[in-house]
Each structure stands twice: as structure tokens, then as C-alpha cells.
Image (cartoon, rainbow, N blue to C red; front, side, top):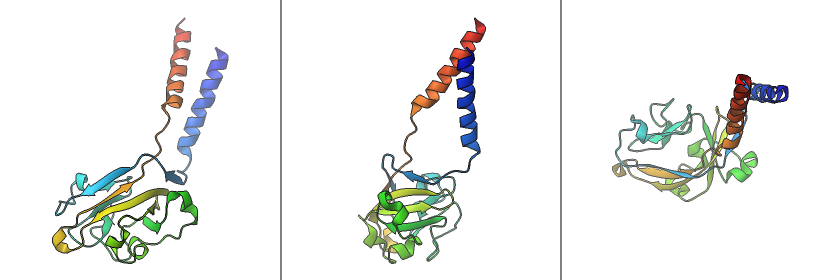
Length: 177
């Protein structure tokens, strides 16, 4: 009984300690998702924003480039999307890639980046994500449509959480006996 309580206490302290630490650099290599935005959409609606994290919500207005609607009102040359930096390549080499603002990275030619592997670094969150643009509406008359696929966080294994819950239930059941 005491041994179970000691193991549980150590596990609980490890979880608490992990919560207190600052988030570490992360590389998202989980399943890919596709974000697609139709032409002439209302970008103020959440469904027309890729809310990647609490800090980065990517969208595009009827023309120009992508921007972070969480912190920007519209696309700003050589700045947008705010709180990001970009490079061609994959997260397999994220730590050796040269990063810059999105517009500089793509050479001011969004259609030229379609089909190319890129990495976006979410700077505040310190997360690296594989991203590949699939479509890009070129003219203002195209209404700003675009799409991309990107990686997601690696799914957390449920076994650790379930083990802790099981351990807590076992301790609780033993106390009642």
C-alpha cells in the first residue's frame, strides 16, 4: 500500500513539475490536415481561420497574402503573418533551415510556393510545423481562396493518463477496505 502511494506521489509531482516548466520547442509530426478557404469568405468567422494555436490564426482576405488575424487586421508586407517565420524544407531539418518572414521566404510569389515543402515556425509557441500550399487564387477577382496541408501535434499516448487514473482508483479502493 505504501509503495503504491509513493509511486503515485512521484508520478503526481512529475506531472505538476512538467506543468510549471515553460513550454519547450516542439516539432509537430502528427497526422496532416488540410485547411481550405473558399473565395470571398468572411474572415472574421472562426471557420475561415486556421486557429493553429492560441497565438496564431491564419487566414487570407480577398487579395494579398496570409496573415495572423489573432494579432493583425490585414496582411502587412514583409511582416505577416505575425508571430511566424518561414523556410523551404521539412521539419526533419528544422534546426538548420534559414527562416524569414513569409513574403521574403516565398520571394513575393505565393503561387510559386504551391506544391513546395515548407516549415512554419510559430515563434511565441516555439513550434515547428510542416506545411505545403496546395492552391492559391492569384488575382483579386479570385477572391482570396487558398489551401494547404500541415502537420499537427503528435497524439499523446493515452496509456500514461490511464495508468495514473487506474493507480488513483486502486489507492482509493484500498483505503475503503
